[in-house]
Image (cartoon, rainbow, N blue to C red; front, side):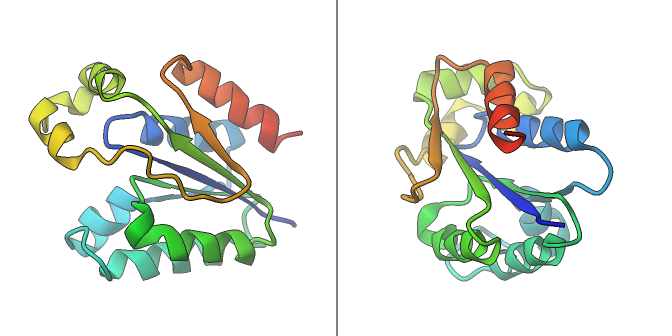
Length: 165
């Protein structure tokens, strides 16, 4: 089996987790979803700092899925400064059979999307502004920028068309 890696990145509240879970549900049994929040906050309880333990564990979990799962999805803010080298390693590890997406949304659109989800009560616009890191492109050839004009359904259909082509 030749596994395919899907990387979904962007600012908090942009819709990454929703898209990643939709993809996992669509692809079904044996699709590995590696969520930065799950690994960092739930499994390890570490802060998102340079060299945090989550970086290596995300890599190890994703590598585990290669040749075992048809699709391995890695999603999260995945700041380029902290996670970029690890993500580029994964792209090579998956023999360049990788699809990379970055939610390149305006701050206003991000707030709008955040306010439409259940987690909106966990943090608000002030936190989003404090965490805001625009234009955090990974800088790889296959990176696709997802924009304000694209609905969640548009994004989902784009990814499905590219991955299943």
